[in-house]
Image (cartoon, rainbow, N blue to C red; front, side, top):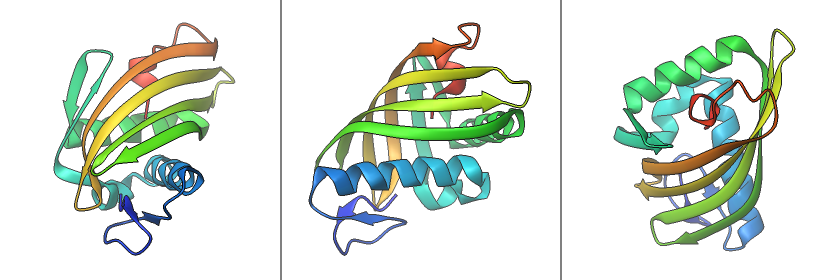
Length: 143
């Protein structure tokens, strides 16, 4: 994911300010969900994600992204806050999903992750449905 300041290596880089980090995070998530073939660019081979107590590896995450992308008309990410200390990143973001059948949901996500060589290696998320269709679960939707 290239979360190195200014001229780092990896898929993305960002400047030293929080706004640059927020833009880099949003861009990474939107690109991965828009084109799941980009996932290896942003996530390590040994990537592990735990969302609301459910853990998956990179292969399972990629399957999840492909499934969600096939059902969604649009998926947008809104990063509200972001902090980075070394390889650790925390953010608070919303995932706005509009499904092809017209259902909508906004999922609030508290996100804690570790990057390695500029790509996501570990992610822990806590989610909640902030608005929209409450039959959709945060774990099923979160990025």
